[in-house]
Structures are given as C-alpha cells and as structure tokens.
Length: 257
Image 1 (cartoon, rainbow, N blue to C red):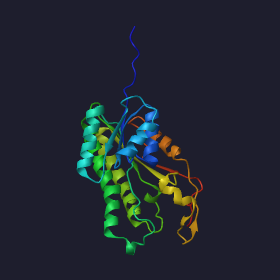
Image 2 (tube, helix red, strand yellow; image 1 turned 180 degrees about the vertical axis):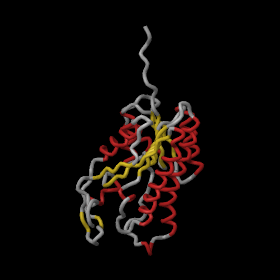
Image 3 (cartoon, rainbow, N blue to C red; image 1 turned 60 degrees about the vertical axis):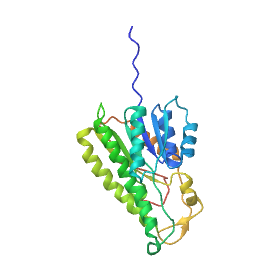
Image 4 (cartoon, rainbow, N blue to C red; image 1 turned 45 degrees about the vertical axis):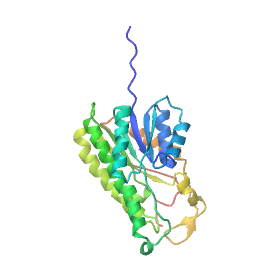
C-alpha cells in the first residue's frame, strides 16, 4: 500500500517581519504550514516573531536585511535558496513613513531619499531577486505581493515622500505583473488602511485631516490584513488578485475630505 503523499511545503520571504503587518503576515503563513524567511533590520525582533510562531522546526529563517542595500538583498535570497531550495512568495512589506507632519518645503533631502530607498528601491531590489529565483527554479514560477497602502490612492497631509513611493509601487506592481507572465510569476498589490499596529497608534488619539482639523480614526485588526494576504498567496498561479484594498470600515477615505 502506497504511503499518502503530502504536498511540499511552500516557502515565503516576508520583509519587515519584525513588527506590525509583516509580523502578522509571517505568523499567519507559518500557522498555515508555510516555511518563512523573516527579513528585517533588527535580528532580535525577527527572532521574537519566530518565537511567537507555532511552526515546525526549521520552518523559519531570520536574516538581518536592509532592503535598501543590494548586497543585503542578495544575501537574503541566497540564504533562502540554500535553506529551502525554492521560493513561492515574496511579501514586499518593508517600509517607512519618514518624518511625519513635515511640510514639503521643510522636508530634508536625506529624509526624502531614505523613504525612497526603503519603500521603492528596496521593493524593486527584492522583487528583482525574487524574479530571478522564480524564473530559474523548477517548477518555475511564484508570487509577489507588494504592500501599497491607501496612500497609493490618496495622500495624507504632509506625506509627500511616503505617498510618492506608494504611487510608484503601483507602477512597479503593474510592470512586474506584465513581465512575470511568461514565467508564471503572479504579482499583485494590497493597499491597507488603518491596520492596528505601532505605526497607527497615533490615529486613535488624533491625526491631521485634509481640512486641517485633528480627528481620531478607527482602526482594524491587523490579523484581518494577514488573512487577506494569505488568501492572495494561496491562489493557484493561474489566478491573481491584482489589487486589493483592505481598510477600517469607517476610516475617512471614501468621500470628500
């Protein structure tokens, strides 16, 4: 009698996995049986994410990575290939808002450059490395999900660097999606609004609105974001969620500001 065959474990890279949305997505994937490479700038927070996971031995790999540095990104994907052999998913999540509340005329160039290097250049470098691996592996293919943000559609006041990079990510998503077709690489984007993380704590106490007033905003459970990413990730490669928007139901997004 033949032993029952089990499906091979799928492997993901999650950037910015040491906190917030990245941590929540990594834990969701690990709970679903994925192997996950946790990437971020602080090894201790990556190890904390791994420690929270109810996952089988060897399912996590913590790699200190600054996504803005090509050499760090190359080392990350080399480590993934050596440890897991293949790559099925990149969740391109690492990002920074930059200095909040700074008018455009006062924004230092170094601050602008840091946001662009992290949010846009980092996403490109990781996607490029993932493309190379997914194209060459057997069976060929995989999926990339970019974390776009509500700011990919509409800005907040004093958010020029963050908003510009998130609009650029939409262009990156579309180009990657087109270029990935011959290689069974599916690329989509999730735009998230007011998930409850350390980054959004200030929204519950009051944040600047388009009309110049301060107002508290509702937030949603970050676990709802993680479940959405997992749904996108586990589709067969002949189906793709091109763009998904997940937001707190009552946040001031739809309608006039």
